[in-house]
Image 1 (cartoon, one colour):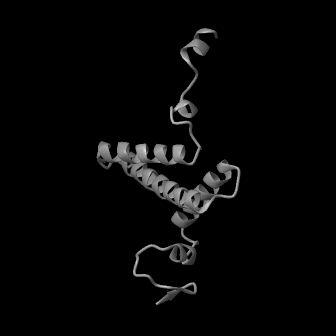
Image 2 (tube, one colour):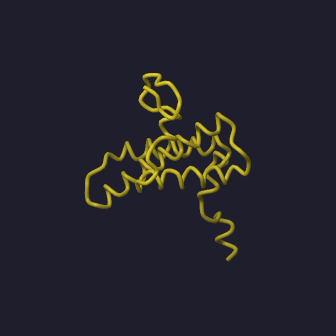
Image 3 (cartoon, rainbow, N blue to C red):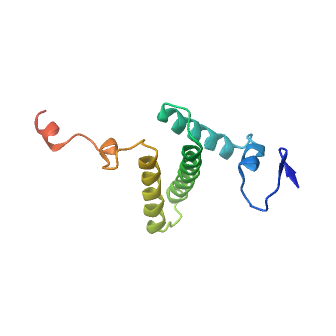
Length: 117
């Protein structure tokens, strides 16, 4: 079977299948917007490795949004799943250089800054 001119390798999810995916669905548009936004944060054209990390970051971001929506709808969500996914998002951001690894980009003002106000 051929998808976008590439031979099917038997894998469920290939880059060619991602490109061939129908981009008209809301989920696909959201994924594309997230990936594009993360890529813009890099400030340069992503390498092949960075591109794979950007894909994973968009995938995991969508999963986190789905869990959040389910929780807000009243469904019980396993907290360990949420924490694991949140940790993976953080590690991907650090690997891409979009976060410093210490969490400073997500923290509010320091105690010193608060006391000086």
